[in-house]
Length: 363
Ligand SMILES: *Cc1c(COP(=O)(O)O)cnc(C)c1O
Image (cartoon, rainbow, N blue to C red; front, side, top):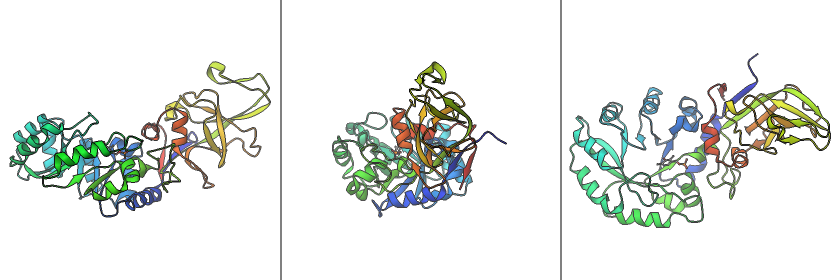
């Protein structure tokens, strides 16, 4: 028998989340962001659930190739554009649309030999200060690009730093509007948080870019959870109990003996550890589901195992299923956001870190 650990990707949940997100801005076109191997889910595994997308957005050329290999003939956008001149050949061959965020990428376009002109998304740095042209340089970048025979339509995009929080998007949006208002071309703004929280703006965009919410994590957790946004978990991580220990007061659990029982306890050892992608930073008390019922972790997470409290769950024993995040067989849900918060991180990091040794099934 293989080690009892498994991840499940829920096709129906992906489909339902896309529909749910789409209801916020039904007339906009949706880039479905599948970078980082579809946020750890696996591009091949999410494709069926996300076929209703208008386009796929990602970073790696090899991921773009995989999306084409899966039969997708619609738009694909490279969110960081080309890294070197050679990349543009693949853009021509696979018909990829790509971001242009710096002068060097315009130089590359000027040097690129292509029969078909490329569709590009010119990126404005509206205040996040990662990628993009500063507002003062935006027009000259546009004019330079527009003069190139290698360039077809030019769209405009920017990315928000604070769509999930109180600072919001107003200042960045003002920069974007100012820089682009009298230029032709489609506009792309709004990550998941902006689509959900700044719906009016998403409705005005030609293209929005949905990522994390598709994968069943609330971008503004803990202010709002997936239940508030009507999203469903798309990844479940589940492991079996492979050992039981009965503790007396004073007995310790795991490396460093960080947990010491104060009363008699029964604990189960689940076959999941940090080498499976479960964060070692999860402290005692991190929520889990055992046979669909809430419990919590005890002591330090080790490489291959972690301990869960079974004291109040007498029916649980060897072989019982522990849901680390996602949906239990009973239908009970443990949002990945709850576990991420316990680990002092975000759902994004947990799903992206699912280890390759964990077998994955798609249902
Ligand atoms: C990752 C990414 C997104 C999606 O962000 P989420 O918060 O996951 O919705 C959108 N736009 C760009 C440019 C990105 O890099």
